[in-house]
Image (cartoon, rainbow over all chains, first blue to last red; front, side, top):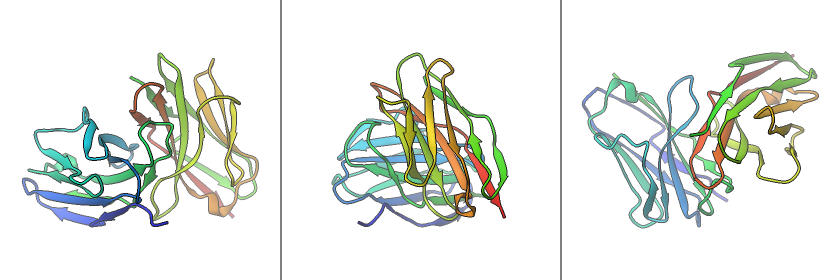
Amino acid sequence: EAGVAQSPRYKIIEKRQSVAFWCNPISGHATLYWYQQILGQGPKLLIQFQNNGVVDDSQLPKDRFSAERLKGVDSTLKIQPAKLEDSAVYLCASSLNYGTKETQYFGPGTRLLVL
Amino acid sequence: AQSVTQLDSQVPVFEEAPVELRCNYSSSVSVYLFWYVQYPNQGLQLLLKYLSGSTLVESINGFEAEFNKSQTSFHLRKPSVHISDTAEYFCAVSDRGNNDMRFGAGTRLTVKP
């Protein structure tokens, strides 16, 4: 079974530029999550989708971050414009169903450096 | 909202020694508890979880964790560690009834020969 795929693995941009990350969850997984992991901290949930609908985006900085999961499969997370404090690893995870009882499967992450 | 404190940021131990990684949580309601592990250059993966029932849960590679409601703890233990256990370990908590899982800052376990 293929795992969660993410690309790119690394990205370096200058502040005020825009960037996009892509995630392909495990086939058949209904729920998809995006996390931000700043160096020295644990992952922080940004947004979660159930199929192609948003179920929680309360911690997403909506003035600069956006995410979509148009067909209920792949997802993209965008930052526009980026700030220095956005430097972090962005993790995508998926689970078979909705609910935190479900095991989340994580991708390798995208490491973003904003200069 | 719930939160997690991992009391040790780094834990160095020698091979075959016992280890305990500490995790305390705060929540006003019943919780689910998790330990995730991140091996070098790999993604996070679930190690074990407590949902209900027996307060002692075990993983397939010899780790165990015990849910202690009175002390609001979920410490992770292994009686004898291997070099291959070197990794970062994250404790996480979720209130039952919501879908918001909160992670601790992580504990880096380094097993030395």
